[in-house]
Length: 201
Image 1 (cartoon, rainbow, N blue to C red):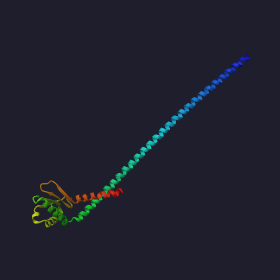
Image 2 (cartoon, rainbow, N blue to C red):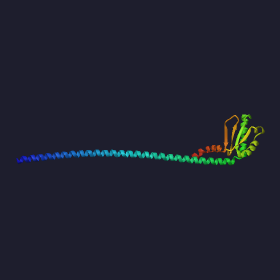
Image 3 (tube, one colour):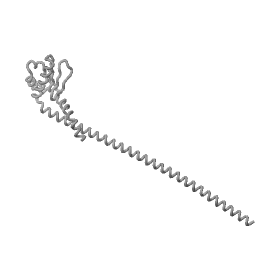
Image 4 (cartoon, helix red, strand yellow):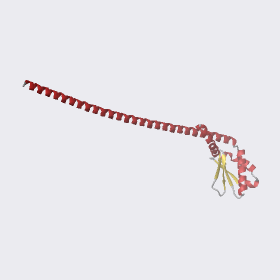
């Protein structure tokens, strides 16, 4: 009886150990599988975070480069405008110094002679000149025109003009602007491409 009891106890003990080891093996396998899943998820999340960070860095770099390019364009534009403004002022100052009443009078006379020659003497020419230069210009224009043409050309003062002149012809609404501002602007416009080439070189 004692031997049977011992055999039963040994068998139960052996079965318990086997069950315990099986459970242990199952738990270890489950733990390893769970750990593997956690590790894979962590790696995937880390890869996604790295990819997102790289994308954001690339986007920030692109935005920064675009902002720098935009700033560069604005600086170039401001420099160009400043230079063009200075050139225009310099040209205007030069024109003011060079376009003396005698010179302007001769130019007006030559334009009037050319126009009346091509278009006949039926048209009258009205010339707007700076108010403070009217007397000197009248003398210069009369000196450059033949007697029959003088009565077709009339000079009128314009307080808005600081230099140069404006021409208009009877029967026409067109005014030809040869004021110092208009001439300076036209000359400066021809210099602008050269200035632009210097700035962007």
